[in-house]
Length: 467
Image 1 (cartoon, one colour):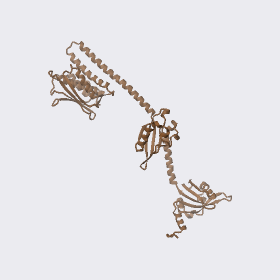
Image 2: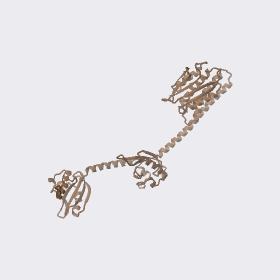
Image 3: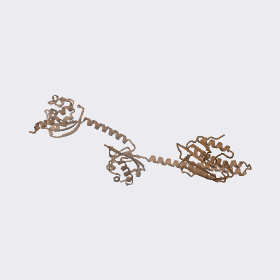
Image 4: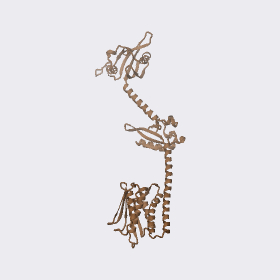
């Protein structure tokens, strides 16, 4: 006898009562002709009564049909071969009568007898049904997509495929499942694809354009693929990929690029013609100067020519630029200074203009032309007030980095007081141009004399012409 006082029989009985799995012993009931018609409950453990919410007194000795008159016949058909032929049966079945799912194991327990071990698995089944519904919903969604949706394992092998594109491009899953890109035979795309897989396995989201479905050779298809890692308990367990046909997008981009190039050519042609027209105007003025006998006219007309040259300098800079709607401020100031040197009769004794400007500052056309004219008028004003005995004139123009969308130009000169007659036309033009682009201009005559011209880069409004 064991030291703890248990006999073999008492130990078995104790385990029998403690079992979490329901146990029941049955006797098969036959009709006079030997056909199974019912089965009787001979014994059961406590778990049996807990699961079915019954009492021992209400069950033992009774038949199944006495307990549940509408019990489904399938239970008897499952158990009869076990009792009669000694077959063992393992199955999961739902009972409408009891409203539960059961996992059952039935085995022979003697002539016309069988024992049953079962568990209530209704909760698990409900969970599985929910998962099945979610999976069906997921498949319905991804299979309605025009993209190719797929998964891969940690070795880069394809594990599932979804999406309408499978049928569209004639992709057969069997050709891909369980294989890597090298095993499929798409070596041309493998290098880029392996790099994307490597990035995704490090936890990154990898986007690349790579035809590793083998579509381009057959259909001229461009494919963009996004690879995203799948996590489980904080670990990467695989990859999800989406392959998108971007052929139409590529074609549209090419059309837009072609249209942009065409627009650029047309715009350059327009700018070139504007420049030529300005040159024609300058030449017409020159012809008028040759033909006139009015001594006061040449100075006025040459000044007008100079102002038109200032406008033309904007188009000079634009024609040498790769951008067709913006002008480099630094290049514009340099072009203006060179042009001023060449017109010695309008800018006498002008020896040098030192330019310091940010190369990255770009002005829109509607701002560049007024700025060119304002700077021209400032230089012209300084030169006109210079004493005749002065043999050389040095100027400097500086422009720093734009701050908060505004630009500041300073033109330094050597005169601490205003000399010579005022140019009323120039003054009106200067005021109108500055107001046009919503800027401000002042001249400081103390210490180092200089003009201060401040304006918003994108601030040009409608033209304002002085009256």
